[in-house]
Length: 557
Image (cartoon, rainbow, N blue to C red; front, side, top):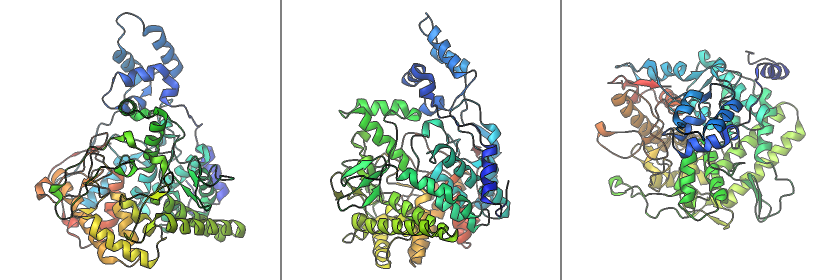
């Protein structure tokens, strides 16, 4: 693997030499009616299980065999599937957390457990092969995920982790070069959508830690930006194309989108059931569900046309019951998200800065202008001075949404807010979203996992860093310390870190991971590990450093 000083041409040639031939066919594409039958008859309890299987023979031969035998008396679909596919289900590894081990040491021990090698990719499965080693989240998530990986990389500090960090950035550059985007995750069924565009953040982080030269990745940063802006040329006011919307007055902003309008293959039965429960055109519903998955917030009342009434009463967490939030009214593609546009502003600034370093003055001016235009649009369409916060914008209705979410911290994290806006937002966060265990995801409580009472590592990190960058150290420290205490309490009792956490005030022995969503709580867990390690390093006196596991727990790979 090349060092940070390697020339860009050498890096690109290395990438091309180690890159496998791309395979864009999804399980639904390959197996057609067999896929539908397996998912509709729930051969596996989790819809993701079948689409992650590896075929034992050529997919064409398996489909032909199914067609030849499925109509015969006594045909056993489950037996056919198990005979023709290898199940790659998550299984406990040989790693078991060590009772008495401090949390920082536990996280350090987990990196090899969660690291995957390119040669482990089974042929003709849905898994997209990559040229370098990478870190997976854990549990049922056994592939590389886009925005998770930036927050995971925060924990890869020190020279020993530089090769892995460099390889991770190279993998994302390879995905952009090969597919034209960074997919949601490295599965063929994710290729129709991306996730929050944080490749620029990865490049900046890896350069800060001496693992890469950011200039080597300027072409991929430009390509990612082009993906998000596809269709913007000539777009009329009030019109949308893919991920781009032109608003009245000419402002150009972005939304989440997915190129397919079919049920998600990894959640096929769930999506079909949602479509059957409402009178919407299925294609519209599926597109909005998929777009919400591109956001990373899958799912939340944030994306619903009419979010449930009733909000969390600060100081009385037990008085608020979770509300059932049906996805039937999901309208993701009608919403311009503040966090997405803040990330794209950061990408545009990064391209402008790197172009200036490379001596490409015209490119630098172009992206400086793009970044400034987006910053002005974010101010105009997302900032609510009366409430002192950023809100998403409904471009079809031409109005600001009224659901306060932790996405409002991303303009701070991206450096967009003015000092006055940061001051107002700090007060709003403290009054409306600060919870006992960290920063709440939204004000609404529901059975969706990106709502109260759950808290997520990525949101804590962006709030902590964004507030600190604007000088609001007290609130930044408070969120960090509350979050570390939450993570440490679960680790102390269960010997593991998990995907999300309940932030409610409970008795110590009842502190638990989060709930809600389409699948059980996952342990592992990549971005929790990365954010927790980074916060522990910034808070050396926090009591979490003295927290040790009381019980051994197998680590799910």
